[in-house]
Image (cartoon, rainbow over all chains, first blue to last red; front, side, top):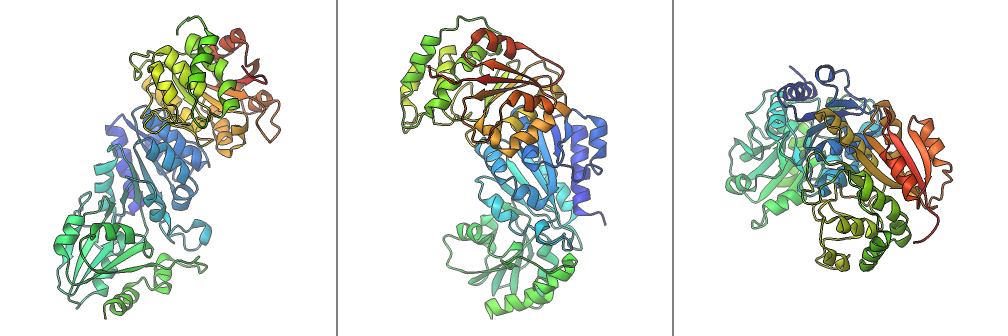
Length: 295
Length: 226
């Protein structure tokens, strides 16, 4: 199975070949994987070196001139280190860029907290009108990259190592209905889908699948709402989507529960799967948390 | 490129109309002569068509103290003079830091230091990719060069051989860190850098008009008020 990052890069390379307005700006990370675009047109592909703030600024310069820039690096080095550049160079100026990161949350589990970034989505949510995409499989990343690369918005696409068993036919801006029930509504985000379906096996709950977080599909959520409890299972800090869901459900009195990465520095090492278990974000841990939430 | 008569008194008069609450006066007036020379003699622009593809691009990186910038843009006809007294007032298009979505002729929205030079590098790359001969001129302050992001771009631009990029540093002695001589430090990184008197119009025009294979830096020293 092709990894999500590899697929996203392959898709960008195809778009780069087909659309002369695509530009790629890198900060050393994944330069080897982007070799085809450098070979095809080095005028539209630049590796600035290890300087993430300048990677964002240079991409904004391309955007000012009508290009559709794509930038890519390890999650915290752009989502956190270069957040002001993202906010001002793109958000404030209303320019478009597709930011693709690798290493969501604790994918770099052996590297320690310097390479963790469970706060990335929360950081992007501070920039108004940002589009946030969290695919759960490589094919979904492909669909979402194609749907958004030229949309003129600051768009963030987060890739992770752990993916769902089968990709869904996702659509930008739409929730998918995975299961219908009556007692509660569970919103599974990106790579959390399979384990959420496993965790809720035998439960009388609706399970919705989210790969576009902003703009959020409030219409489907409200239409499919089951019971008085809404549980969001998110692959980043627990509660990140609380504001988004509160806004989506503003006319509905519900109890909102967040199952996600605990808000603490993760000092343990290991694979993402091992850390999922430690943090109660494997299927068994999610089931315990959902059961505790809704009784 | 235009060859307008550089009516400095007129720019001072126009800048004085922008009497909002916050002017960063030293910052504003230290850029006045360089901006006048740029827009009067150096840059290829069309005020009737601010988005003209063949125009040269100018980015006021530091954003601060834009009264002189607004005065020069108004003088060139990008917007009417009667906008100037609205400076920083509620409902005005003219804030303390220029907004490209509000002010005709403003290429980039700036104000937070250290953003303009990386943007300018990207714009220069993009223009080269499009095959044009337009230039990108970006203005920073000397104190703005304290920001590390500038030095990222200062390292990068010569490696990319951006001959269509000019960095104009207005050295009004604001920097806490002793960068003098700035032009020598830039030259170490591969820029074609030269110092000029920031009030000397002929020297500014000559330095800002020159193009090289490598990016150019013009360090304009200003120690006097208008």
